Image 1 (cartoon, protein in one colour):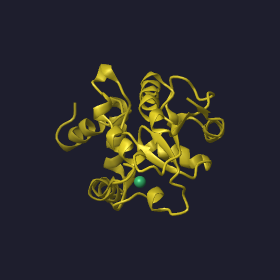
Image 2 (tube, rainbow, N blue to C red):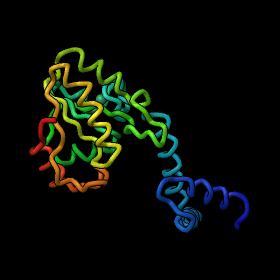
Image 3 (tube, rainbow, N blue to C red):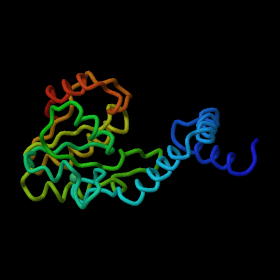
Length: 197
Ligand SMILES: [Zn+2]
């Protein structure tokens, strides 16, 4: 289509999730006509995210130090642990302001069709955390879709024999959807109305 650098940029942008060929082209030409200082800031932000951001050694949320902000906060109870699929789910739940416990980020959900089994998720690490005996309630906040439900069922079976109360977010979340797309009020209510599994 185009030659050289502009086509390289369009190709790279087109590999990003949710960016189709038309959007890639539009963004590339926006970059081309943008103020050089703005483009430098964007390039720096891209580089810094790879240099600075890592995963929390406790919960696997994104962090800029050994531990994430939630794990470093001594005011949050360690007795309630909320299991989510991705760091973006932590952000969605934090927005509700309903939760004062800690998180565990699995890094995905069980999905046999895509070859993702329990061993590919941070389930061993979760069981290790639960083994210390501090956690009294485990909230399963995986996505309300097939993979999320399968993961929640699997975790409930593993964890209930440990004598820990296991709860799942209440219905009302859009079925088949993604936790991050639920609005704060719906997600907040789903938290309040969580039920034992
Ligand atoms: Zn953490």
